[in-house]
Amino acid sequence: MFLRGARPPSLPAPLPLWPSYRQVRRFCRGVVRAAGAEPPLEVEALCTAVGRLRGRPIEVRYRALPPGMFGFSFAYDKQTRDYVVVAANTTRMHQEHIVLHELGHILAGHIDGEATTAGDHTGDHDAAREREWTAESIAVVLAERALLHTRRFGERPADPGSRALDDALRGGGAWI
Image (cartoon, rainbow, N blue to C red):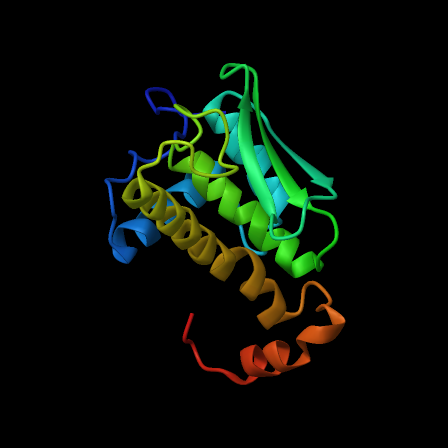
């Protein structure tokens, strides 16, 4: 329910080419605010909220992928829904990062004009590097809120292999 005259939340303005890390952080804060997400963020809940804001759902699927391929995203019918496909044979923490990376592609508009993020079909390697840098930067900034917050404050049990990460986060100052 919105106040009279108030606009419903919407995603922030698109990022420019080769955005600064500060611009990416500001963009991600706007995404999280518009999505109405509060820490601890759950990755799939964030995808659901972003899909609602975009007007087409984002569906996450876990599949066996060829070696060296960890995930990709694509738009189905460009009007109906977006998909994120994630490697099923990796750790939960890695899967969450893959989802955030692919969500970064979706948020940056990389699949709006392309069929998929599964490889560079344009032959423009500079553009491909820019897309990957932007998607990875968005993933890292969202991970600070979505994953590290929960590990730092203990709302979710850590992966068995991440004891050193948990110890560092629990003992660290306010570096995030």
